Length: 294
Image (cartoon, rainbow, N blue to C red; front, side, top):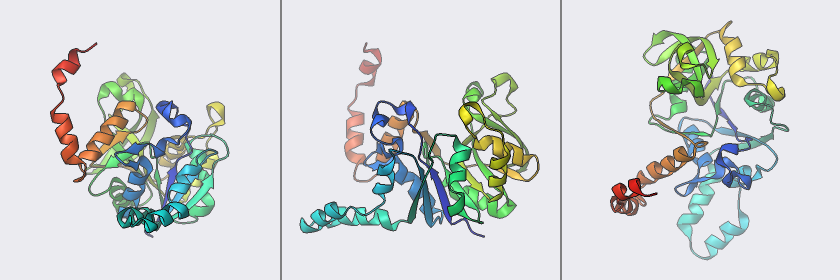
């Protein structure tokens, strides 16, 4: 069965991007002139995802509204002859069918995925953590879907990180299956570098089957009553095939302020309408002077 549904976890508080995220959901912060969530939804649609399931929390209504009709704005654009802008807005709501479900308390990624259970139903689905914006061709999630089609079961996105940084990530341990693909034995959350079994870190893209819900229900709750998806995957991997896919593409961490700024610059440079002016500005910077400024 093809992967038609994508679950987007957008209920986070955005504490790493304060103070901006105090009044706007983190995924609505703009990269160039589009919010981060739009890049992630575009990745999904380009991979064949037809239904976007937004797992939201109180205060995240702006995310759902973004993909809905803005009647007054669209009417104003039509009246003023702003046909290009109008087409862009109308294109947002035509990208995919968008459904919102509410996570009523911040009880972890496992609980957030489980919140979408009734909408997902009995078919495989993709999960996106929009903190991670990935610029890939083919789209990163398409690479995972292809691995799922080949090997079946659950697939986790991974990328190599410096050994000195493995204690910042969930790290996988597995057996080589094919180029970029492993069958996982375990997932270890933020191990010391001396104990890490690899330098392959989990990134916020997954393909799951409905089996994952059984394991989310089985794992014990952690600190603050949270249920973590990595714990469920780890338990599942002991009993069923779970594979990792080392995707090709560049990942940006929206929760890191430098990562956010880098993403905005890089993605703007890929835009023909923004690239010339931005390049002219960057070329005019006196980097040596900036480096010595106090």
